[in-house]
Length: 330
Image (cartoon, rainbow, N blue to C red):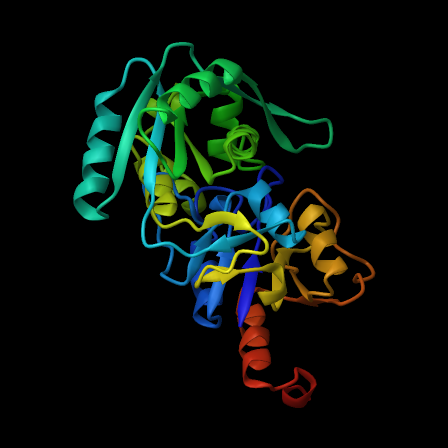
C-alpha cells in the first residue's frame, strides 16, 4: 500500500500550514502504509524532522512530475548533499552541518555564493503566500562550476527570506498564512528543475525571529526554538529518492502506477490532484484541514471526504486489509 500525502505550501492549512505541525498526522498515515510519499512542507519543522523510515521525501515540482508519469523515483541509501549559502558562512550553519554529520551521518559540501541569492516573501491577491527571487542565474552558474569539481546528489539551500517585521509579528501572534513558505517553494522548485535533482530550502533565522521570545501557537513552536532552521532539510535530503527515467529498471524504483491513493486538504485542486484523476488514483480529502480555499460542495469523481487524519488512516488500513468502508459503518 503506497500513498501520497500533500499539504500545499502557502495556503494557510490548519494542519501543516505552520512549522512541521503535520508531522503527527504524517506519521499516523505512514504507519498504515508500506510507503508514504510526502513533500518537504509536510514534515519540515525548522531544526526538527520526525519523518519515518518509510516516508519518501520529494520536492513539490518533482512530485508533480512523478504523479504525471514523467519520471520515477529510486530509493537510495544516502545522498551527497551540496549546501548553497550566501557569504559569509555563519557559525550557526557550521554547527548545524557538524551536528548532522555526527547524528545522521550525512556527507555535505558547501558553496558560498559570490552573488547573493535573495528571497522575499509576498502575498498574492487571493491570499496565497508566494515569493520573489533574485540572483538565481548567477547561483546556477556557480553550482554548475562546482559540479565539475565535486559531484553531488541533492541540493540544500539556506538563505534569509525577507519578510517585514509587521507581517512576521502578525503571523506569530495571530496566525494565518505562513509568510515564508511560498518563497521557499519558488526557490526549491526552480533549482530542482534546473539540476534535475531533489532540492529543499531552509530560511535562515532573520528579522523578528532572531529575538522573538514569547509563547506562540503550538503549531509554530518549532520556528521559535530553532537556531539555523537547517537540520530538517539535511535529514530529509539525506535519503531523498533519486529522480530517474520512468523506464528505469533499478531495483527499488517507484512509479505513479505503484500509488494506491492520495491524501489532501479539503478544497484543494491543482496539478497533483489532476494527475491522480487522470490515473484514476483515489483522493481522500480531509475536512478538518481547512485553508484559504472553499471546501468541496460536490466531491470530484473518484474522491471522498473524511473528517480528519485519524479517519483517513482508517480508510488506508481498510483498503490494505481489503475491508470496504461500508462494511464497517452502520
